Image 1: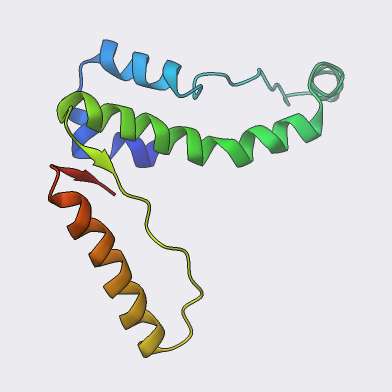
Image 2 (image 1 turned 45 degrees about the vertical axis):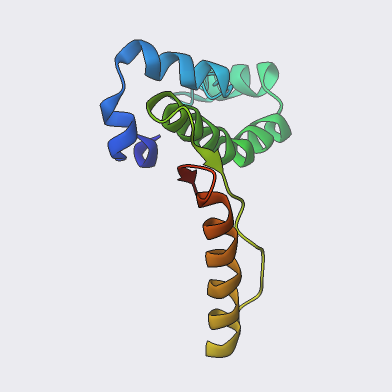
Length: 117
């Protein structure tokens, strides 16, 4: 959430727009976890599956990214999302090749309007 809040896009939105983006991205669903006492921890463990907590923790970065994309779309409705290529970069040559592929994808989409990366 801190990363999301630090973006210019997010700061430009109204509180209502932020709420809507978080809700649409399912980034508002966070279970109550109380760990003050041993009894609190036991209640939390009875009510919340630890694996479900891990799944939620794994999902949150993507959900926040989706909220940022939704916010960007609000401010720039014509914008298109570009997925950058995946790669393992081991050398300068690998980096140069990846940058060239990423640049090509962005330039190709840019012909049709603003691009979200």
